Length: 416
Image (cartoon, rainbow, N blue to C red):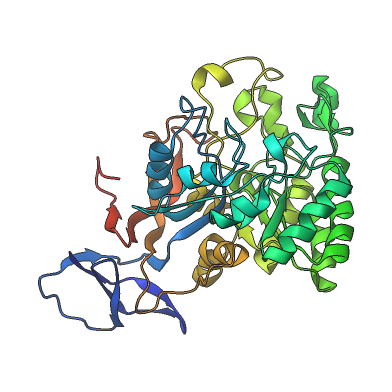
């Protein structure tokens, strides 16, 4: 199929330009002004931004083992609706993705890419290293025990030394298990008023500070998952100034919400890490703008309604985020077109070692995003609907998504 995208502001190697994009047989074939339609399906992108497809470093697809929450097919549908053309699937499934044959079962290339990550430790139990060489041979490049912290510094050092030799990346869910045991929300004024055991900010920060010393020791590339505190931002900034190979992500919900939401006692606001203070939110926003935090990662965490429809303390942590990420980031942070695609697409791909960049001839993944259009998040493609923004009116919507499979998403009712 031949497509012609006209009228949009296209992120090119020279920056945003008012050019047309011809997309034929799975890739961009021309990028210039004034292309005349010739048996093309014409897509009017007036008032929209055209750029590389979004890349999520942090998606929970729940397959295998928890398909009642999500599966790969429904997760891909949610990703496409949100403009994501590549997602990295977390390994905390059942069984845990700790060996190559399990990673190969996750890998998908169409209509979007599903890229498996691998566990650092066997079964994510924190006692023995996973089959890192086997995972590497299966295409895994990011290793994490996400959902748990690798608490044993000696074991993590050995993992970092090995992964550094391979050229991979270790990502950490930073939460000290002793400091954070039995916690349900941020430890602070709100938790005190509610009488709920809290998760102190220090629980995140001490793990990251320790791990940065291990980065110095091993030279391993290190990625901080779902950064949530102002002090974490300063640790990242200092590490980067010191030249350490460190990157970080922030979730849309940590850019928009703070711990005061929990006063409602609605379990939808229970997440991992917890919502922090307004000062933390401000620090995270500033860090995303100035590049201290490299990327947005959704931490898309589906849970079925019956699992969330319990008391706050009993509820699982996490929310779905793929379909609303672009809208929430657009609302929370002032980013121009170039910076928006840098944080949503280019930098996340670069963290994983992808040759990500602006639209050029030969590009296969691109998205059309209208930053001002309003829409209602009332028809989730995900199997789960645990979102604070369910049935809310949002601004900024994805209208088309292209991959090597062609046009895989439009804004027309019923298509995705």
